Image (cartoon, rainbow, N blue to C red; front, side, top):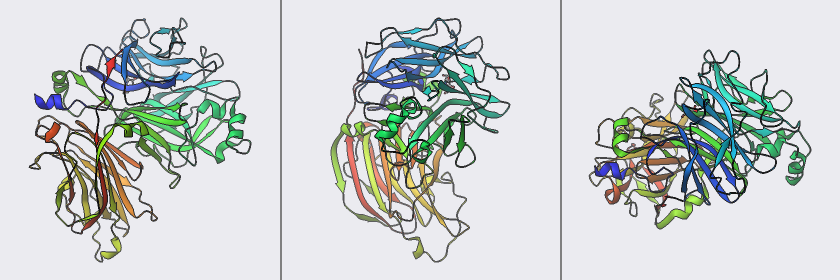
Length: 548
Ligand code: DQQ
């Protein structure tokens, strides 16, 4: 079917064929970005899990390499599961990963490059001491996986954290090591949250309180920390004045990635959240098992996340592939709020921008739907800026806090909104994916702003998950515009709101609005006019990905 072919992406990372899931071990090494990924070389559904491997010099053009790790030892014979890379003190990388055996019994093992002078790191060897860690007493061998990147502290000890659960409590176990081979379980957990189930793919890293620069965890806390502090012009420790910590967990029960912001004490080795609970989501759509790394080339922290399919396994078998990685995102703390991180596609993505069509200010009257010039085709990078509506012009406020994006989706009618974009839309508006704002008065009288991504009319094809996604976005009183950046790439739509304060990733499979038949529209379904200040639409180039 043409629509199966049309769903393959043009500028997102995906293998040539077969099934991919979690991003693993991302790093920058000797001029190359490396991405590894959970991969089934034998089919388009999960199983036979190996580590696929690709390299890039710019995070957008990738070259496939041979499999880095395959199940060939007694301790990982059922699968080489997720893990992370750490750059050791001598500058060489080490991978820690979960081996699965004997009905998914999990243990942690290590692999190192056969030839660290090879910038492509094509060949890896598992160390003879494997498995390095078995499930500790009280932890089921089924609930013990996904070691993080290790960090070095000034006591000379490496630390890693590993997700687990005790009854229904999700926990982050903490281990220390002097030589990266012998690891000791600590008797306190780094973090835990009741009733959250198994914690997969935990991630733990520092962020600056101000500015976009990333921080290398080991340089921040390790023996070189004084030097770093001097470079930053800071006082001597404590660093907590300038840094916060982010703890991310992928919840097996809900399949969502949540993060909390807080502080980490090098005295107690505990993470303490600023606010109780599991925290907001990185992304309110399809985005799971994510992982960050510190990019020493440009001093950024970069986030990778897995965008799985919304079609059926049978569709995936027919297509011959499943899953893409969302675009790598630079992440940093939102200094304006202090309570969320910001995510933005790495700036290298901008180099794929081709023809630009810019539109001046216009007003969307109630029920208007405008076709946007320059928005034909399936690969777009769209930025639209709306004037924040003046809610004080409404005298009779009917609370509408029940709306959660799903009731009618973009067809719902409110006062201010839904208004926004229809992407991957055919000429007759039969198929469309709506990305929109909806500004709602609450019982308290306060107005809140939601952003939704409505897949319910995205395709005529059967057996798709067409859930409508959405969440509230924090619009500050000082902000007088509402901004969307939407990246469209055949079957993936990635939305970034208000400079990256909220992200929503959708997977959609149009049957009519494919390839050159795809259109872009602006719409307003609310009862009040909405001012569009500007629209910029770029055509996005494809990136060829080859094996080398
Ligand atoms: N995927 C891996 C596990 C991890 C899960 C197996 C998360 O290591 O917990 O493919 O998607």
